[in-house]
Length: 66
Image (cartoon, rainbow, N blue to C red):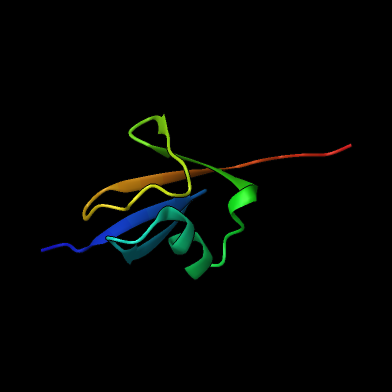
């Protein structure tokens, strides 16, 4: 059985343990939470979202400038 969640940023895939928060997973794979927008099934999700086994979270980089 698959006990991981897949996180995708650009074309790179990360496998993280399901059952933790999205924030904890982002920190573990060294992605700054404030630098991405997170979606699951096309819906925005927040950093306190609990990750479920077998699901995929897609990250979109936030671009800022001045």
